[in-house]
Length: 269
Image (cartoon, rainbow, N blue to C red):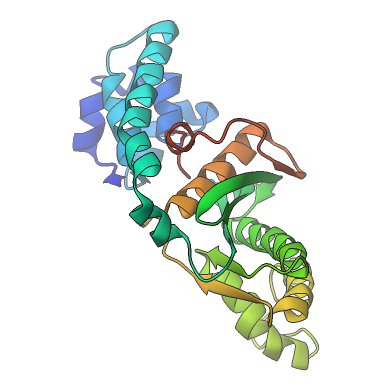
């Protein structure tokens, strides 16, 4: 990850007023905030790939040439990332865990609160077979997006476990996991109240908690670190961004080819 500093921004623009729309998108700044983009960007972080593209677009004024650079860069990223995915069974062993089916879920929001979306990556036998995205909200939060993704994962796990498969859900939101595995137990006993104020996101928590209790003896739900190089987590992350871009309020299966290198070169959340 690259922390955005004044020194870094100077590598991509000589004059802040000359920043291109594509560079704004790489910094996760809405085009409508162009007038104040510099202040909004400082202190934020972007992936190394987005940071490199930001600098590569310096001085490129035409949109056509910018798109060519972005396309060529993505092709290079695909070339770099594709061989390890295809050739190494060691990597597959790192992804394949306790279950026949492994579900990675993620939620994202930009800004927070703001536009949110959820994503899921499903692995069978250590190989990704399905990607899902959606549940777009115009004014959501990171927590609601994470909870939505976990709930959809529980629904998938319910079907898979009913079919006799061992299922492992991997979630990078400790908040979401605690909501349904730990805190909800006490909240339920107190009539769904807590000391100090309201329980935020109560409806989705209650629904997820009820479903989790039905299947908890048949599945595992574990926490993983976000953006730690786990392919499944990264793919789910890309689906959260794709959900915001598509603005699909339903939860749908990704219909494109599951080209791992190409998808990982998409904008990260």
